[in-house]
Length: 426
Picture 1 (cartoon, rainbow, N blue to C red):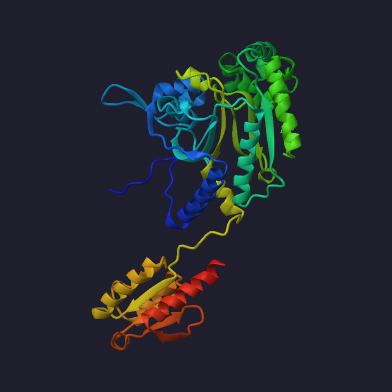
Picture 2: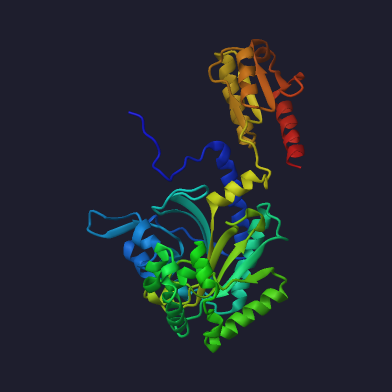
């Protein structure tokens, strides 16, 4: 019986895995430079965690969670997103007792049952950064700077990066704005798409973010939240904008930007890379000052963002943004079998102990076959061990590009290869 991978999932093969490794390495270097500590949360969580935090009217909860009842009768789900899990871990592990702010990051795998698209799968990976314990608008600036620096290290031109930014207010001013918006939208409901008709009562803010042309035309004339902000939210947003200007961060006010999850309040943002066309947002985030207390923890202001790795790596690959190390062996050892094979095995161990990427012919079917294998693997060097070489204890080191070769002892070969690697690294 032949099996295939589940719809919306992907096999990451060795040639692509090295790209993932390099991307994750650079992301972690930047996150740690900003003093964010890595957190790893379980793949399985209580379904109620996301119903309570993400929102029971969101598509994630109503349509997309991989939820099931386990053998103990518990309602369990594969994580559909990271913030709620990190907030749960923050509470459960008493991280609130640490010096504030507590800054965390993750690179993790998530699952949502949605229509697979290019760069968007049912099983997907994200980098996320979360900060707990600071109300300062400067922490939002830090998160935006962190995201810009990550993208810069991954080959994106940071001079053209910008951030779309908005505020959706707090629990004091947001409900009033929702009522005003709902009244306006209701009077134009006949022109709404089907999804947005359902959103009028469930999540009216999401209508502002709809990409349907009819919905866009309706919301062009809709009231904006800026006229309904309380003094605290107005002050916070004004300070944020002033700081964006002070730090020369390219930004645009976008009153349509609301994000899709219920836990957001005040600041919401998306980082934009213009050359991507209509789908030009690379990452998004915002504040969630009520999430920790809503999940049973202490009052804790918080904010963060998430970056999808599948789409990120697709963009890096398509635009050749990074020089990725090859997965080819640096050295391939050729032999004629029996005693020469055993010597090849010993030599391979010596080279590997020096972190020299080495493969060898385990079949020992002769020099010609071995060199053919070296070419197929695109090895830079070949070491040939035949009976004569075994007797003289001097082996042939062959350059696979120029086809030139000389005999050397193991010690000499090791020094030559190490020197070549140093030059290659430079």
